[in-house]
Amino acid sequence: MAKYIAQIIVTGVQVVGKAFARALRQEIAASQEAAKRAGGGQQGTKRAAANASTGLTLEEALQILNLDKVDPEKLKSNYDHLFNANDKSKGGSFYLQSKIVRAKERIEVELKNSQQTTKPPPTEGP
Image (spheres, one colour):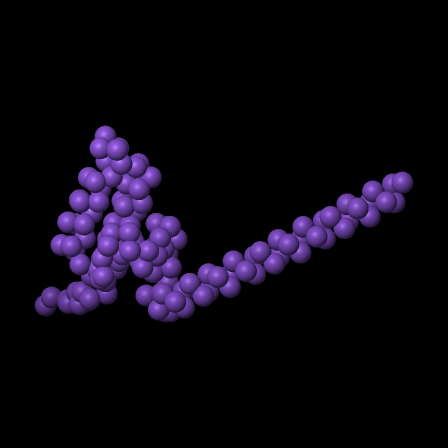
């Protein structure tokens, strides 16, 4: 009887271990694929980090705020309109408001990253 219980435990541990290893490999592959889609290199790493921190890709954020491209003025006007339209006191949804806020945050991260890469390096004085 103890022999069978030991076999069941060993088999269970093997199954869980294999499943964990497979999930880990899939997560690593997905992470690498996300970095490639984000442009690779340092810029891709920044985008992948921004996607992970906000939980949205740039494309999703643009869709949520109904934007074709990253435009600060249009971002502000669309954000204000959508946020106010989904106000809970007006019958809106807190969930949708939070999605709108997260989308704005994701686009602002992209704007910040693009401003950092376009700034010339500081020059040293005499």
